Length: 299
Length: 253
Image (cartoon, each protein chain N blue to C red):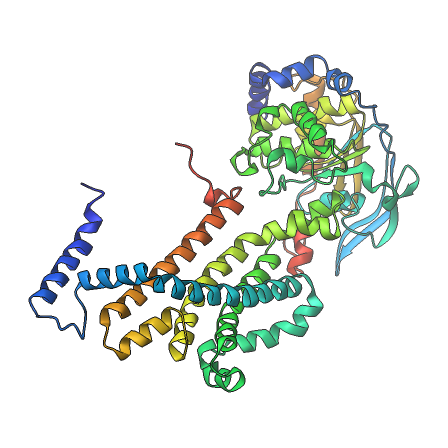
């Protein structure tokens, strides 16, 4: 696994598409071109949040603070509730107790500032790529802004294609452009790279990192890939047994390389911590299945 | 060579038929010779009678489709998007669905007599259910993930409908439309055969009285042609509206 990803990283740097290589070389280029103000990231504060589906407890007494502009990755075994936490912050679910505040205000007051990227791209198949990005954009310059956002993810020439003809990685890049075109102050990423192949995933990680550095939004990434978490995040948070079991600062300079000894050491440490506790026999998988709707959200 | 092959059997059949008729093996009362059918078609076309009947029948079919299909679409949209309306209406509609439209004929004649309203009613009832059911199903099967995404991107109300729900239900609605088009002609044929003062059904029933089997055959072929035309139009609609769908995309050569 590690060897493959290292090889992948070396390969990718050479084979990166031209627009992305430009982006990496001058991270602020797109900002200068569009003249977009650098949006201030939102501060996230999760206070004593608990969530259960029926009798099955998913999260309990979660406290998490994220500073404006910070990049936090949440890792954990599947079914540990990390996606649920993200969905709570996205206001797609409601906490049983506790609350989530953005910049000290309720979630509802910042709906326009928060955008989420799902594991599946969720592009509308009946809209061309550029119209997918312009979805929900008010005003006549929606198309122009959508094309700009598309150029930022290096897909300007695919603007008038149907989503059905794009590859998985391209779809996620469109989904990323769709999220960014709203100039979010908080970007939520729900395992957006989970379904991609190793090479495409590393490309996407670099793209997300460079766009995050350009735009300055706060980022919250849910992933099962510890290496991805260490590569991108300022902090790695582990969720286990319904709570936060580890909150580790990643003190590595950017851009990070998977070849660094410190990178490998940190990744190994987090991974060992994730793996330390064996799956309990009465764990989520073995628990009696709740209704299908509740079960869907839990994964 | 390869392209002509599928036509060998129809052409041979036609030649055999023509031979059997001219040699007297096949009575004109059973089947007229193909040439006579062509001649009858031509003379009806020249006299303008043909167009008149086709126009009358097509208007009936389209009016029935508009009323029945429109209602089916409307009710399907309503029950598909509201749980309350579904509980209220769907069971009743499902019960009514099991009544074959043609079984209503005696009642329809009692209600509306035998004029235009009766025909319109029969066609409307027949096309209602395929469109209703498929619209309902189409709306219910729109990807919940897409709706969730659209909501979190700030869409709600009419915008959510226009951009997500309706386009998502459209493939299913069009399937319903194609079913309806098939049923539309069947019901119209029956309705026109009962009684009519004009239309293709009138043309054929009138010809039957005078043993004009050639004209009867022209009528049958006209129904076939109109049915095919409706199907072609529905397919064109699908290709136009579902261009985004991988199943309808024209393969780049």
